[in-house]
Image (cartoon, rainbow, N blue to C red; front, side, top):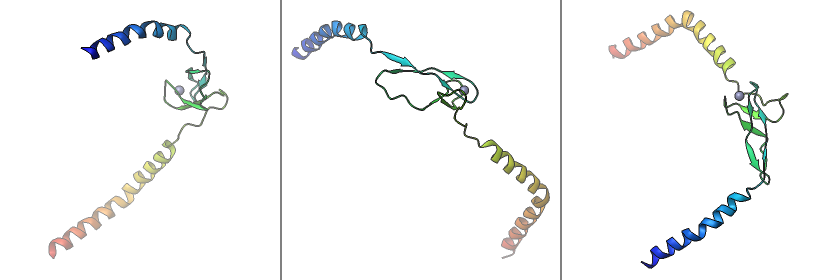
Amino acid sequence: MVGGNAIRGSRVGAGPMGEAERGDSAPRRRVTYYCEHGHESSPSFAAEAVIPESWDCIRCGLPASQDPDHPPAAPRTEPYKTHLAYVKERRSDEDGAAILEEALQALRKRRSL
Ligand SMILES: [Zn+2]
């Protein structure tokens, strides 16, 4: 009973305080970030907040910076992967048969034991 009254009282008291907080909202500043694809992300920060140097693009997720001429380099893994895939493809033609033969021989040895 007593506890219920206390909660109700605090809720009534919180009303005007909440409105006051909403009334003078803290000044915010909007910072625009540019990613390598030219997307613009404009998050807003509290005036006192530390503005981060980079921001993840809201459209493609790449890192974006405040300098549109020098966006952060996107993490590039594709050239390496492509090269590796190319090497694997070439190897599979020439060495695939040999590797298979080795494996078969190993199997046969195991069976003969
Ligand atoms: Zn982007």
